[in-house]
Image (cartoon, rainbow, N blue to C red; front, side, top):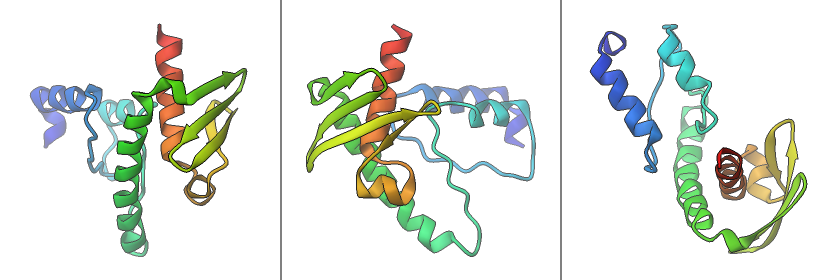
Length: 135
């Protein structure tokens, strides 16, 4: 029903464009240009939930929210980052992290990234990269 409401769509875009962390669910049952546009955004993290993986993914979502908040802190401290072509060295709270740009995505050498393919370091580096390329 929400897909028929332009004011709802406007509100969703407003939230997605804000600096706040925004958690939402998207149905896989319906296809719509609005949903496709959201899914194609570079600032979206998708986690597919099924009955089988719900408990594990719930824990991951909690961790990701913490990682996103940590990434926001890192972004406010750009002196932590040293850019070298397609690599970045970042001084994290736990030491120096090395990130490499592969296929348009930043990959980190931290343990959390190795397990999940995302971390606060890669989120922050991606955001800073988007900021630098849009200016």
